[in-house]
Image 1 (cartoon, helix red, strand yellow):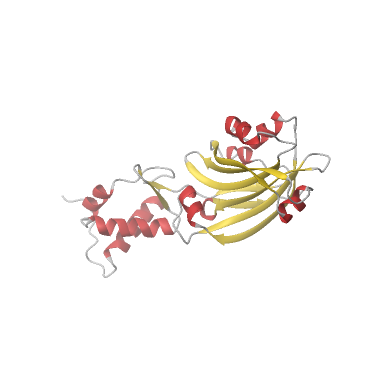
Image 2: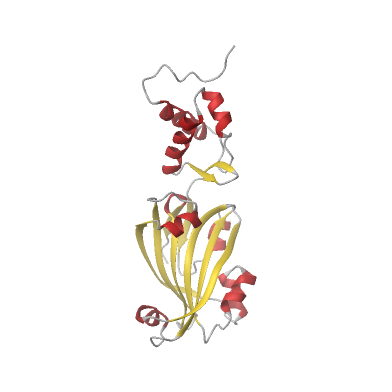
Length: 244
């Protein structure tokens, strides 16, 4: 008896029928969140279609945020959106860990630059003051969640790039300089379309939406410590604004 799916009877395009069947498999738990799907060859054999049809089906699922292709590894089922609270003490590791996932951060690059008028205003500095700029990428388990550009006053946080490279945590980096606690003074949230460099970092297709936050953190006396521009993969995050 042949147990392979027969998808030839319908007038719907082959790739759409393959995509629908995989989506149903995700919905009913046959393909669990984070699990790797069968290979393109295996899927093609299962549905009696060619690999081009399979690729189109997987691309459609990826565009909808249901699966994610990792080069050289395979295609994985995307996990449900992570609830990410925005509060006065916003900590990436705590937010991700609360959902039972492992938080991880990676330093992409760091450099010195002069503060423009906007950054100087946010950080309470004079225009042209030296800043340390960090480019970072953060993950929940193996899934990239956000990429950020963060600026810190170089005078107060000399060599912050190398410290962050060792610590892989902003909280631990600030603790290295004696900052034991800090607060989120402001978060501005907008929607945008991912830019090519961020698409590569976040493993997103071009044209996908992102959630952009621009935030400033201060010490407990209200003195600005850092300001960040963070781009979140919109299909992987759900912001939760909590009453303070």
